[in-house]
Length: 502
Image 1 (cartoon, one colour):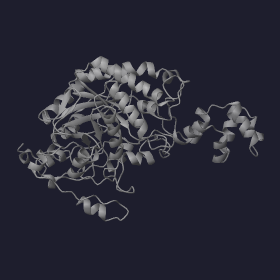
Image 2 (cartoon, helix red, strand yellow; image 1 turned 45 degrees about the horizontal axis):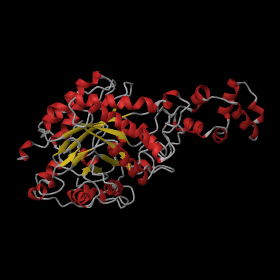
Image 3 (cartoon, helix red, strand yellow; image 1 turned 90 degrees about the horizontal axis):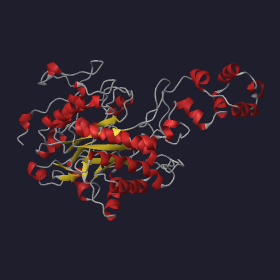
Image 4 (cartoon, rainbow, N blue to C red; image 1 turned 120 degrees about the vertical axis):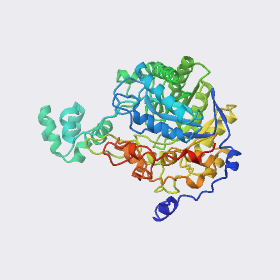
Protein backbone atom coordinates (compact mmCIF):
# COMPACT_ATOMS: atom_id res chain seq x y z
CA UNK A 1 0.00 0.00 0.00
CA UNK A 2 1.29 3.45 -0.86
CA UNK A 3 1.89 5.22 2.48
CA UNK A 4 1.05 8.68 1.14
CA UNK A 5 -2.30 7.38 -0.10
CA UNK A 6 -2.93 5.41 3.10
CA UNK A 7 -2.43 8.48 5.27
CA UNK A 8 -4.62 10.58 3.00
CA UNK A 9 -7.60 8.24 3.21
CA UNK A 10 -8.58 9.52 6.66
CA UNK A 11 -9.03 13.32 6.91
CA UNK A 12 -8.13 13.15 10.61
CA UNK A 13 -4.61 12.02 9.76
CA UNK A 14 -1.75 14.25 8.69
CA UNK A 15 -0.73 13.53 5.11
CA UNK A 16 2.76 12.10 4.68
CA UNK A 17 4.61 14.68 2.58
CA UNK A 18 5.56 13.51 -0.90
CA UNK A 19 9.28 13.01 -1.32
CA UNK A 20 11.70 13.93 -4.06
CA UNK A 21 14.56 11.49 -3.99
CA UNK A 22 18.01 12.58 -5.21
CA UNK A 23 20.14 10.95 -7.85
CA UNK A 24 23.21 9.13 -6.66
CA UNK A 25 25.39 12.04 -7.74
CA UNK A 26 23.26 14.55 -5.86
CA UNK A 27 23.24 12.42 -2.73
CA UNK A 28 27.00 11.96 -2.76
CA UNK A 29 27.43 15.73 -3.01
CA UNK A 30 25.03 16.45 -0.16
CA UNK A 31 25.73 17.46 3.40
CA UNK A 32 23.75 14.43 4.61
CA UNK A 33 26.29 12.07 3.08
CA UNK A 34 29.36 14.02 4.14
CA UNK A 35 31.56 12.90 7.04
CA UNK A 36 31.45 14.47 10.49
CA UNK A 37 33.69 14.18 13.50
CA UNK A 38 31.93 12.80 16.59
CA UNK A 39 34.42 12.91 19.41
CA UNK A 40 37.25 10.47 18.83
CA UNK A 41 35.70 8.92 15.72
CA UNK A 42 34.46 10.10 12.35
CA UNK A 43 31.03 9.12 11.08
CA UNK A 44 31.11 8.41 7.35
CA UNK A 45 27.75 10.13 6.89
CA UNK A 46 25.47 12.30 9.05
CA UNK A 47 22.83 9.57 9.19
CA UNK A 48 21.94 8.21 12.63
CA UNK A 49 19.78 5.35 13.87
CA UNK A 50 18.89 6.17 17.50
CA UNK A 51 18.33 3.69 20.29
CA UNK A 52 15.15 1.60 20.17
CA UNK A 53 14.29 -1.20 22.58
CA UNK A 54 13.21 -4.26 20.56
CA UNK A 55 12.69 -6.72 23.47
CA UNK A 56 15.05 -9.33 22.05
CA UNK A 57 17.51 -9.86 24.89
CA UNK A 58 16.88 -12.72 27.28
CA UNK A 59 15.62 -12.28 30.83
CA UNK A 60 19.19 -12.25 32.15
CA UNK A 61 20.10 -9.27 29.94
CA UNK A 62 22.39 -11.14 27.55
CA UNK A 63 22.77 -10.60 23.83
CA UNK A 64 20.85 -13.30 21.93
CA UNK A 65 20.87 -14.40 18.30
CA UNK A 66 17.73 -12.29 17.82
CA UNK A 67 19.62 -9.25 19.10
CA UNK A 68 22.44 -9.95 16.64
CA UNK A 69 19.98 -10.33 13.76
CA UNK A 70 18.20 -7.11 14.72
CA UNK A 71 21.26 -4.89 14.79
CA UNK A 72 22.87 -6.70 11.90
CA UNK A 73 19.83 -5.80 9.82
CA UNK A 74 20.18 -2.10 10.67
CA UNK A 75 23.89 -2.34 9.89
CA UNK A 76 23.01 -3.58 6.40
CA UNK A 77 21.76 -0.05 5.70
CA UNK A 78 25.18 1.38 6.62
CA UNK A 79 24.07 4.40 8.66
CA UNK A 80 26.79 6.73 9.84
CA UNK A 81 25.97 5.90 13.47
CA UNK A 82 23.89 3.11 15.00
CA UNK A 83 22.99 3.36 18.69
CA UNK A 84 22.18 0.14 20.51
CA UNK A 85 19.16 0.16 22.80
CA UNK A 86 18.98 1.45 26.37
CA UNK A 87 21.22 -0.91 28.36
CA UNK A 88 21.21 -1.10 32.15
CA UNK A 89 24.31 -0.07 34.09
CA UNK A 90 23.26 -2.13 37.12
CA UNK A 91 23.44 -5.89 37.43
CA UNK A 92 19.81 -6.27 38.47
CA UNK A 93 16.87 -8.14 36.91
CA UNK A 94 15.15 -6.02 34.27
CA UNK A 95 13.41 -8.45 31.94
CA UNK A 96 14.48 -8.81 28.30
CA UNK A 97 16.59 -5.64 28.28
CA UNK A 98 20.31 -5.64 27.63
CA UNK A 99 22.65 -5.11 30.54
CA UNK A 100 26.25 -4.02 30.92
CA UNK A 101 26.48 -4.08 34.71
CA UNK A 102 28.98 -6.94 34.94
CA UNK A 103 31.94 -8.29 32.98
CA UNK A 104 29.97 -11.40 32.03
CA UNK A 105 27.98 -9.29 29.55
CA UNK A 106 31.06 -8.21 27.61
CA UNK A 107 31.45 -11.31 25.38
CA UNK A 108 27.90 -10.95 24.03
CA UNK A 109 28.34 -7.25 23.42
CA UNK A 110 31.62 -8.01 21.66
CA UNK A 111 29.79 -10.37 19.31
CA UNK A 112 27.27 -7.62 18.66
CA UNK A 113 29.99 -5.11 17.79
CA UNK A 114 31.60 -7.65 15.47
CA UNK A 115 28.32 -8.35 13.67
CA UNK A 116 27.59 -4.66 13.09
CA UNK A 117 31.11 -4.06 11.85
CA UNK A 118 30.88 -6.98 9.41
CA UNK A 119 27.34 -6.30 8.16
CA UNK A 120 28.04 -2.57 7.63
CA UNK A 121 31.37 -3.34 5.94
CA UNK A 122 33.03 -1.19 8.59
CA UNK A 123 31.05 1.87 7.52
CA UNK A 124 28.90 2.29 10.64
CA UNK A 125 30.03 3.66 13.99
CA UNK A 126 28.45 1.80 16.89
CA UNK A 127 27.48 3.36 20.23
CA UNK A 128 25.80 1.77 23.24
CA UNK A 129 23.16 3.75 25.12
CA UNK A 130 23.47 3.18 28.88
CA UNK A 131 20.93 4.08 31.53
CA UNK A 132 19.76 3.74 35.10
CA UNK A 133 16.13 3.50 36.18
CA UNK A 134 14.20 3.47 39.45
CA UNK A 135 11.52 1.04 40.56
CA UNK A 136 8.16 1.09 38.80
CA UNK A 137 5.57 -1.49 39.84
CA UNK A 138 2.38 -2.72 38.26
CA UNK A 139 -0.94 -1.20 39.21
CA UNK A 140 -2.44 -3.39 41.93
CA UNK A 141 -6.03 -4.43 42.33
CA UNK A 142 -7.79 -2.05 44.70
CA UNK A 143 -8.44 -4.80 47.23
CA UNK A 144 -4.80 -5.86 47.21
CA UNK A 145 -3.52 -2.34 47.68
CA UNK A 146 -5.86 -1.46 50.56
CA UNK A 147 -5.31 -4.75 52.39
CA UNK A 148 -1.56 -5.22 51.84
CA UNK A 149 0.20 -2.04 50.79
CA UNK A 150 -1.72 0.88 52.29
CA UNK A 151 0.13 2.24 55.32
CA UNK A 152 -2.60 3.47 57.65
CA UNK A 153 -1.73 6.52 59.74
CA UNK A 154 -3.57 8.68 62.24
CA UNK A 155 -3.93 11.35 59.54
CA UNK A 156 -6.06 8.99 57.48
CA UNK A 157 -8.38 8.34 60.44
CA UNK A 158 -8.67 12.08 61.08
CA UNK A 159 -9.56 12.81 57.45
CA UNK A 160 -12.07 9.99 57.47
CA UNK A 161 -13.67 11.30 60.68
CA UNK A 162 -14.24 14.67 59.04
CA UNK A 163 -16.11 13.14 56.09
CA UNK A 164 -19.86 12.63 56.24
CA UNK A 165 -20.49 9.25 57.81
CA UNK A 166 -16.78 8.59 58.30
CA UNK A 167 -16.67 9.01 62.07
CA UNK A 168 -18.47 5.71 62.57
CA UNK A 169 -15.63 3.71 61.07
CA UNK A 170 -12.60 5.90 61.81
CA UNK A 171 -11.99 4.20 65.15
CA UNK A 172 -12.06 0.61 63.91
CA UNK A 173 -9.06 -1.69 64.30
CA UNK A 174 -6.79 -1.70 61.27
CA UNK A 175 -8.06 -4.91 59.64
CA UNK A 176 -11.69 -3.94 60.04
CA UNK A 177 -11.01 -0.40 58.90
CA UNK A 178 -9.36 -1.63 55.69
CA UNK A 179 -12.46 -3.65 54.86
CA UNK A 180 -14.66 -0.67 55.63
CA UNK A 181 -12.53 1.52 53.34
CA UNK A 182 -13.07 -0.94 50.49
CA UNK A 183 -16.81 -0.57 50.93
CA UNK A 184 -16.66 3.22 50.57
CA UNK A 185 -17.30 5.00 47.27
CA UNK A 186 -14.02 5.26 45.39
CA UNK A 187 -14.04 9.08 45.50
CA UNK A 188 -14.37 8.98 49.29
CA UNK A 189 -11.40 6.64 49.57
CA UNK A 190 -9.31 8.94 47.40
CA UNK A 191 -10.27 11.91 49.59
CA UNK A 192 -8.49 10.45 52.61
CA UNK A 193 -5.28 9.58 50.71
CA UNK A 194 -2.22 11.71 50.08
CA UNK A 195 -1.58 12.50 46.38
CA UNK A 196 1.25 9.95 46.20
CA UNK A 197 -0.94 7.30 47.81
CA UNK A 198 -3.76 7.99 45.38
CA UNK A 199 -1.31 7.69 42.49
CA UNK A 200 0.05 4.42 43.87
CA UNK A 201 -3.47 3.02 44.05
CA UNK A 202 -4.50 4.25 40.60
CA UNK A 203 -1.26 3.88 38.65
CA UNK A 204 1.07 1.72 40.70
CA UNK A 205 4.10 2.48 42.86
CA UNK A 206 6.86 4.57 41.29
CA UNK A 207 10.07 5.81 42.88
CA UNK A 208 11.32 9.34 42.23
CA UNK A 209 14.78 10.85 42.60
CA UNK A 210 13.25 13.15 45.22
CA UNK A 211 12.39 10.24 47.54
CA UNK A 212 15.43 10.97 49.68
CA UNK A 213 13.92 9.18 52.70
CA UNK A 214 14.80 5.99 50.82
CA UNK A 215 18.53 5.34 51.43
CA UNK A 216 19.19 3.97 47.93
CA UNK A 217 17.62 7.06 46.36
CA UNK A 218 19.38 9.45 48.69
CA UNK A 219 22.71 7.81 47.76
CA UNK A 220 22.28 8.01 43.97
CA UNK A 221 24.80 10.85 43.57
CA UNK A 222 27.41 8.67 45.24
CA UNK A 223 26.48 5.42 43.50
CA UNK A 224 25.80 6.39 39.89
CA UNK A 225 29.08 7.94 38.68
CA UNK A 226 31.12 4.76 39.23
CA UNK A 227 28.31 2.58 37.82
CA UNK A 228 28.18 4.57 34.58
CA UNK A 229 31.97 4.71 34.40
CA UNK A 230 32.28 0.93 34.75
CA UNK A 231 29.56 0.42 32.12
CA UNK A 232 31.42 2.68 29.69
CA UNK A 233 34.68 0.83 30.32
CA UNK A 234 33.00 -2.49 29.52
CA UNK A 235 31.45 -1.00 26.40
CA UNK A 236 34.85 0.09 25.19
CA UNK A 237 36.29 -3.35 25.97
CA UNK A 238 33.52 -4.88 23.83
CA UNK A 239 34.72 -2.95 20.78
CA UNK A 240 32.09 -0.23 20.51
CA UNK A 241 33.08 3.16 19.13
CA UNK A 242 31.44 5.07 21.94
CA UNK A 243 28.73 5.33 24.55
CA UNK A 244 25.60 7.46 24.80
CA UNK A 245 24.60 8.37 28.35
CA UNK A 246 20.81 8.21 28.59
CA UNK A 247 19.74 11.45 30.25
CA UNK A 248 16.31 11.54 28.60
CA UNK A 249 12.70 10.49 29.09
CA UNK A 250 11.41 8.86 32.28
CA UNK A 251 14.65 7.56 33.74
CA UNK A 252 16.96 8.45 36.61
CA UNK A 253 19.35 10.91 35.02
CA UNK A 254 16.60 12.80 33.20
CA UNK A 255 14.74 13.07 36.49
CA UNK A 256 17.73 14.75 38.10
CA UNK A 257 17.86 17.30 35.25
CA UNK A 258 14.14 18.02 35.52
CA UNK A 259 12.63 21.19 37.00
CA UNK A 260 10.50 18.83 39.09
CA UNK A 261 13.65 17.80 40.99
CA UNK A 262 13.55 19.79 44.23
CA UNK A 263 16.17 17.83 46.18
CA UNK A 264 17.77 20.02 48.83
CA UNK A 265 21.14 18.23 49.00
CA UNK A 266 22.84 20.16 46.21
CA UNK A 267 21.54 17.84 43.49
CA UNK A 268 18.27 19.60 42.76
CA UNK A 269 16.46 22.90 42.90
CA UNK A 270 18.47 25.37 40.83
CA UNK A 271 19.40 24.57 37.24
CA UNK A 272 23.02 24.24 38.39
CA UNK A 273 22.01 21.81 41.14
CA UNK A 274 19.93 19.76 38.74
CA UNK A 275 22.83 19.53 36.28
CA UNK A 276 25.32 18.52 38.96
CA UNK A 277 24.90 14.74 38.87
CA UNK A 278 24.85 14.65 35.08
CA UNK A 279 28.13 16.54 35.04
CA UNK A 280 29.65 14.27 37.68
CA UNK A 281 28.62 11.14 35.78
CA UNK A 282 30.05 12.57 32.56
CA UNK A 283 33.35 13.40 34.25
CA UNK A 284 33.56 9.96 35.86
CA UNK A 285 32.98 8.27 32.51
CA UNK A 286 35.50 10.47 30.74
CA UNK A 287 38.13 9.85 33.42
CA UNK A 288 37.60 6.08 33.13
CA UNK A 289 37.70 5.74 29.32
CA UNK A 290 40.07 8.56 28.42
CA UNK A 291 39.77 11.18 25.71
CA UNK A 292 40.39 8.92 22.73
CA UNK A 293 36.92 7.33 22.79
CA UNK A 294 33.54 8.92 22.10
CA UNK A 295 31.18 9.79 24.95
CA UNK A 296 27.92 11.67 24.39
CA UNK A 297 24.43 11.87 25.81
CA UNK A 298 20.76 12.05 24.95
CA UNK A 299 18.73 14.74 26.68
CA UNK A 300 15.23 16.18 26.55
CA UNK A 301 14.83 19.49 24.78
CA UNK A 302 11.43 19.86 26.43
CA UNK A 303 9.80 17.61 29.04
CA UNK A 304 6.33 18.83 27.96
CA UNK A 305 4.86 18.02 31.40
CA UNK A 306 3.39 20.66 33.71
CA UNK A 307 6.18 22.23 35.75
CA UNK A 308 8.82 20.41 33.72
CA UNK A 309 11.98 21.57 32.00
CA UNK A 310 11.90 23.59 28.81
CA UNK A 311 14.41 24.27 26.06
CA UNK A 312 16.29 26.91 28.07
CA UNK A 313 17.01 24.26 30.74
CA UNK A 314 18.14 21.83 28.05
CA UNK A 315 20.45 24.42 26.52
CA UNK A 316 22.06 25.05 29.92
CA UNK A 317 22.49 21.33 30.54
CA UNK A 318 23.90 20.66 27.07
CA UNK A 319 26.59 23.30 27.54
CA UNK A 320 27.44 22.10 31.05
CA UNK A 321 27.78 18.52 29.79
CA UNK A 322 29.88 19.57 26.84
CA UNK A 323 32.22 21.44 29.16
CA UNK A 324 32.38 18.29 31.32
CA UNK A 325 33.85 16.44 28.34
CA UNK A 326 30.96 15.03 26.32
CA UNK A 327 31.38 14.80 22.55
CA UNK A 328 27.81 15.08 21.29
CA UNK A 329 24.26 15.82 22.38
CA UNK A 330 21.31 13.92 20.93
CA UNK A 331 18.00 15.71 21.48
CA UNK A 332 14.64 14.12 22.22
CA UNK A 333 11.38 15.38 23.73
CA UNK A 334 8.81 14.26 26.32
CA UNK A 335 8.21 10.65 27.21
CA UNK A 336 7.53 11.08 30.94
CA UNK A 337 5.67 9.08 33.58
CA UNK A 338 4.13 12.24 35.04
CA UNK A 339 1.31 12.58 32.50
CA UNK A 340 1.00 8.96 31.39
CA UNK A 341 -2.41 7.34 31.14
CA UNK A 342 -3.70 5.13 33.91
CA UNK A 343 -2.62 1.53 33.25
CA UNK A 344 -4.92 -1.44 33.58
CA UNK A 345 -4.76 -3.46 36.77
CA UNK A 346 -1.73 -5.73 36.57
CA UNK A 347 0.12 -3.48 34.12
CA UNK A 348 2.78 -0.85 34.71
CA UNK A 349 2.48 2.82 33.80
CA UNK A 350 4.01 3.52 30.39
CA UNK A 351 5.66 6.90 29.73
CA UNK A 352 4.59 7.31 26.08
CA UNK A 353 0.82 7.36 26.55
CA UNK A 354 0.22 10.94 27.68
CA UNK A 355 0.80 14.33 26.03
CA UNK A 356 4.55 14.18 26.66
CA UNK A 357 4.70 10.72 25.13
CA UNK A 358 2.78 11.88 22.08
CA UNK A 359 5.36 14.63 21.56
CA UNK A 360 8.18 12.12 21.96
CA UNK A 361 6.80 9.88 19.23
CA UNK A 362 4.29 12.06 17.37
CA UNK A 363 2.01 10.30 14.94
CA UNK A 364 -0.11 11.29 11.94
CA UNK A 365 -2.98 11.60 14.43
CA UNK A 366 -1.44 14.62 16.15
CA UNK A 367 -2.23 18.11 14.92
CA UNK A 368 0.39 19.19 12.41
CA UNK A 369 1.77 15.68 12.11
CA UNK A 370 5.16 14.39 13.18
CA UNK A 371 7.28 15.61 10.29
CA UNK A 372 10.29 17.48 11.63
CA UNK A 373 8.19 18.45 14.63
CA UNK A 374 10.98 18.34 17.19
CA UNK A 375 13.75 19.94 15.14
CA UNK A 376 13.19 23.46 16.56
CA UNK A 377 14.38 22.33 19.99
CA UNK A 378 17.62 20.84 18.65
CA UNK A 379 18.10 24.05 16.66
CA UNK A 380 17.76 26.17 19.81
CA UNK A 381 20.17 23.97 21.78
CA UNK A 382 22.70 24.01 18.94
CA UNK A 383 22.47 27.81 18.65
CA UNK A 384 23.15 28.18 22.38
CA UNK A 385 26.17 25.88 22.15
CA UNK A 386 27.58 27.77 19.18
CA UNK A 387 27.11 31.22 20.69
CA UNK A 388 28.87 29.91 23.81
CA UNK A 389 31.84 28.78 21.75
CA UNK A 390 31.06 25.05 21.85
CA UNK A 391 31.23 23.15 18.57
CA UNK A 392 30.19 19.61 19.58
CA UNK A 393 27.69 18.06 17.15
CA UNK A 394 23.97 18.02 17.91
CA UNK A 395 21.75 15.16 16.77
CA UNK A 396 18.22 16.13 15.74
CA UNK A 397 15.19 13.88 15.36
CA UNK A 398 11.41 13.80 15.10
CA UNK A 399 9.40 12.39 12.21
CA UNK A 400 12.15 12.68 9.60
CA UNK A 401 11.33 10.55 6.59
CA UNK A 402 12.74 12.22 3.48
CA UNK A 403 16.04 13.33 2.01
CA UNK A 404 14.88 16.92 1.62
CA UNK A 405 13.79 17.21 5.25
CA UNK A 406 17.09 15.78 6.47
CA UNK A 407 19.22 17.92 4.18
CA UNK A 408 17.30 21.05 5.08
CA UNK A 409 17.77 20.37 8.82
CA UNK A 410 21.52 20.20 8.30
CA UNK A 411 21.66 23.40 6.27
CA UNK A 412 19.38 25.51 8.46
CA UNK A 413 21.25 24.77 11.68
CA UNK A 414 18.70 22.43 13.25
CA UNK A 415 21.34 19.76 13.80
CA UNK A 416 24.66 18.29 12.66
CA UNK A 417 23.45 14.70 12.32
CA UNK A 418 19.96 13.45 11.47
CA UNK A 419 18.35 10.66 13.48
CA UNK A 420 15.36 8.61 12.35
CA UNK A 421 14.03 5.78 14.50
CA UNK A 422 10.65 4.73 13.12
CA UNK A 423 11.59 5.38 9.50
CA UNK A 424 14.71 3.25 9.98
CA UNK A 425 12.55 0.54 11.52
CA UNK A 426 10.23 0.67 8.52
CA UNK A 427 13.19 0.37 6.14
CA UNK A 428 16.66 -0.21 7.62
CA UNK A 429 18.16 0.33 4.15
CA UNK A 430 16.58 3.71 3.59
CA UNK A 431 19.72 5.76 4.16
CA UNK A 432 21.67 3.50 1.82
CA UNK A 433 18.94 3.62 -0.81
CA UNK A 434 19.06 7.42 -0.79
CA UNK A 435 22.84 7.36 -1.08
CA UNK A 436 22.64 5.06 -4.09
CA UNK A 437 19.96 7.07 -5.85
CA UNK A 438 17.34 4.39 -5.17
CA UNK A 439 14.96 6.48 -3.08
CA UNK A 440 11.92 5.24 -5.00
CA UNK A 441 12.53 1.81 -3.41
CA UNK A 442 12.14 3.14 0.14
CA UNK A 443 9.40 1.76 2.37
CA UNK A 444 8.12 4.88 4.16
CA UNK A 445 6.88 4.84 7.74
CA UNK A 446 3.15 5.40 8.26
CA UNK A 447 3.68 6.97 11.73
CA UNK A 448 0.74 5.15 13.29
CA UNK A 449 2.92 3.85 16.18
CA UNK A 450 2.07 0.21 15.58
CA UNK A 451 5.63 -0.42 16.81
CA UNK A 452 5.12 1.64 19.96
CA UNK A 453 2.00 -0.34 20.85
CA UNK A 454 4.06 -3.53 20.79
CA UNK A 455 6.72 -1.90 22.96
CA UNK A 456 4.05 -0.87 25.46
CA UNK A 457 3.05 -4.52 25.84
CA UNK A 458 6.72 -5.58 26.07
CA UNK A 459 6.29 -7.64 22.91
CA UNK A 460 9.00 -8.03 20.31
CA UNK A 461 8.93 -4.80 18.31
CA UNK A 462 8.28 -5.02 14.57
CA UNK A 463 6.78 -2.84 11.84
CA UNK A 464 3.38 -3.30 10.24
CA UNK A 465 4.92 -2.69 6.82
CA UNK A 466 6.97 -5.88 6.88
CA UNK A 467 6.26 -8.17 9.82
CA UNK A 468 3.62 -10.21 7.94
CA UNK A 469 5.75 -10.39 4.79
CA UNK A 470 6.30 -14.13 4.50
CA UNK A 471 6.33 -14.09 0.69
CA UNK A 472 7.83 -17.19 -0.87
CA UNK A 473 10.04 -14.99 -3.04
CA UNK A 474 11.98 -13.88 0.03
CA UNK A 475 15.45 -15.44 -0.36
CA UNK A 476 15.62 -16.10 3.38
CA UNK A 477 12.13 -17.53 3.72
CA UNK A 478 13.22 -20.92 5.06
CA UNK A 479 15.02 -19.34 7.97
CA UNK A 480 12.72 -16.49 8.89
CA UNK A 481 12.87 -15.80 12.62
CA UNK A 482 9.36 -15.45 14.01
CA UNK A 483 7.88 -13.71 17.03
CA UNK A 484 6.97 -15.73 20.11
CA UNK A 485 3.45 -16.31 18.79
CA UNK A 486 4.80 -17.34 15.38
CA UNK A 487 2.74 -14.72 13.53
CA UNK A 488 5.30 -12.01 12.78
CA UNK A 489 8.75 -12.00 11.27
CA UNK A 490 11.40 -10.44 13.52
CA UNK A 491 13.57 -8.69 10.92
CA UNK A 492 12.65 -6.94 7.68
CA UNK A 493 13.11 -8.73 4.36
CA UNK A 494 16.59 -8.31 2.92
CA UNK A 495 17.35 -5.75 0.26
CA UNK A 496 19.46 -7.71 -2.18
CA UNK A 497 23.09 -6.63 -2.33
CA UNK A 498 23.01 -6.70 -6.13
CA UNK A 499 21.26 -3.34 -5.86
CA UNK A 500 24.37 -1.97 -4.18
CA UNK A 501 27.26 -1.14 -6.45
CA UNK A 502 28.90 1.08 -3.80
